[in-house]
Amino acid sequence: MADFADAITDERAGRRLARAIQGKGAFRRFKDELHDEYPDLVPVWYAFRDARARRRAVQWLADNSLIDDGSAERFLDSHPDPALP
Image 1 (spheres, rainbow, N blue to C red):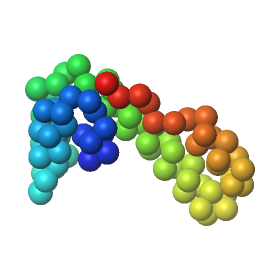
Image 2 (image 1 turned 45 degrees about the vertical axis):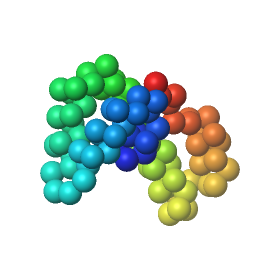
Image 3 (image 1 turned 180 degrees about the vertical axis):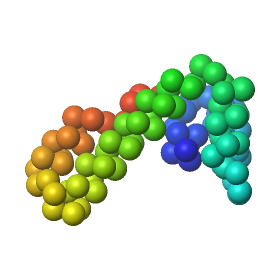
Image 4 (image 1 turned 90 degrees about the vertical axis):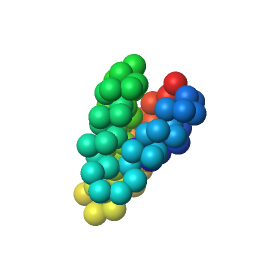
């Protein structure tokens, strides 16, 4: 969530989303802020979140020797984070 807030080009939205993830209840506040104030960023957030999850999964597989490093690198190189507005 912090990487997403830092990477979007709308500075105001980035600041508000970054503030929303401070302290207890961060996930709910982030989701509420995103859906209530920046609904146009919702599909962008989900694409970013899903891409990061896939990349973490492949990295975990490589770290635990369940796939070879070359396969992991090829996947990671061909599946970058999506472009953010």
